[in-house]
Length: 309
Image (cartoon, rainbow, N blue to C red; front, side, top):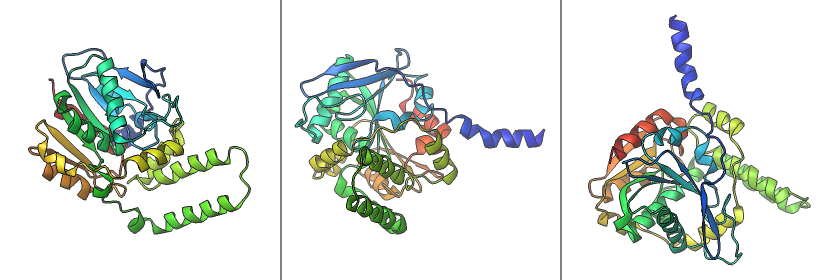
């Protein structure tokens, strides 16, 4: 009996890692440059809806739904996800469309307005953290509560440790890139290189090798647009909202994985110290994706912070 209980405890985390069902978008917000696809999970409730804003840039929301964490959160409130312009189900209609932060903020606000929501909660993951901070700076009147999950207030404020921790992996990737560029590019090679580059990135953002292997072997297509990522990165490289954090007057929660080498915990700590009354939560067995590495705790922490209002 004791052995069965122990085995059940070991298996439980993996059982919770079932990807959310792939469903068609709930709708689209039509614009001149892009029709933004969005998804709404959960039934209307008295609680404030939460927008789960994914990172990247250049990634769709798909990497965030590789387990059922957001479905669990949707039991208490509606959860809204959307694909940012130029990613996933939101391809650009205009190749010359603006990609800067003002445009990203306007897109998020267009989804909010389309859903007729006056107040929303925001949870921004990684680059999504920068986006929700930018949104909260521009539209504090619409923000009920704010969560920044392994995010950043600006590229210059990030503490990024890949070069210090993974010099071997970065050199190997650089050498592989040179080899590909020197050889003849076959059909589909650029796309294959992009997929491999994304997988190489994920190889450095997990704390648990077991959970990394499970994630990569079970993950459904991780949609990534290198062109969009490069364009957004270039257009937002000077964005820095560090000075705006002190002006936030709504509840804020800053989340970090203890072993996040992509956006190191010092980044989160500085944001926590800058935002009046903010809360700080460390996930001790996580890298850059605590929602996947410690999903049960992540759901509990988010639910408790958002509460019943």
